[in-house]
Image (cartoon, rainbow, N blue to C red; front, side, top):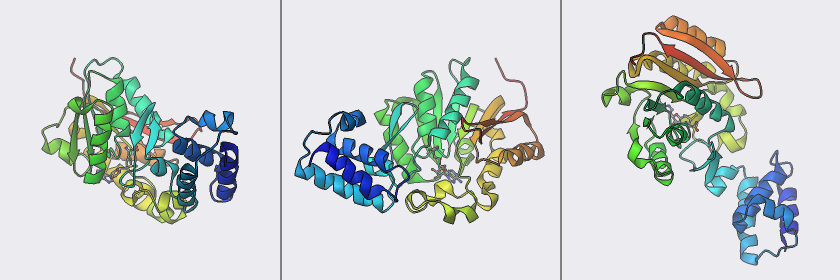
Amino acid sequence: MNVGEALSHGRLLLAGISDTPGRDATLLLSFVLGKPSEFVHLHPEAPVSESLIAEYTSFLERRSAGEPIAYLRGFQEFMGHNFLVDRRVLIPRPETEHVVETALDLLCNMPSPTVGDICCGSGAIGLSLAKRLPGAATVLTDVSREAVDLARENAERLGLSQRVTFLVGDLVAPLIEMGFAGKFDVLATNPPYIPTDEMETLSTTVRDYEPRLALDGGESGLQVIRRVVKEAPPALKPGGFLVMEIGHGQGEACLEMMRETGGWSETRVLRDYAGRQRVVVGRKAGLREV
Ligand SMILES: C[S@@+](CC[C@H](N)C(=O)[O-])C[C@H]1O[C@@H](n2cnc3c(N)ncnc32)[C@H](O)[C@@H]1O
């Protein structure tokens, strides 16, 4: 079989199963071949060995059963870096880059900020920030020890191990317990925010493969978000910022929570490129030290 035939075979097999059969087949074939995806389109006549076809076929079967491409390949690109991912962590989504970009805007004039990523998963947010902010001290936390283990591996691969601290625990609690109260310039987070009653409506690829703990945000999807709004202020410096990913339609509820909780100023909801509510920002009241 040559590359063109293998690609057509994959596309046909995944048609009706994946929304993007051509893209999926291209990514899997190029991964098996160890080549960039353009190779697959530019060299349809190139031969593919039997053993590689067998490997490709097994990936196509797993993809047909619903397994996400990122778990099959073992990595996901985010903010220009490849993050290791597997079933221990959520696959970082492109929308989450808005959280990173927003935090970077807020931190641009601070040479050595202290930055936290709570609910870190693979470490996509916190490690991307650490990479872009060489003077930053960064702390990543997650309640899942398995997720923190993988985030630590990602830090090593990105050459960040010396500058990043990892903690396991419930939301902000480990930060306070480890003496980081009042220390953060920015806390960035992408907490679980899917309403429990929508979990069953998710695609197989998400529902049956990604960790429920990373997705299920309880009633209305706001249970963890509500706790973050309440619990983040003690960890922030006066004038420090919370930058939190939210689901579309959750913006008003988040702003209302911040009003009710008190102690937040400059609260706002930012939209992603699709115009959907994506990030909520709030500033802890009080003057920042200079
Ligand atoms: C939506 S995922 C985000 C992962 C990563 N930050 C990203 O954006 O790709 C949410 C993460 O929150 C973690 N989590 C859920 N409940 C938590 C809690 N109470 N305290 C800390 N982490 C929690 C999950 O283990 C999961 O890794």
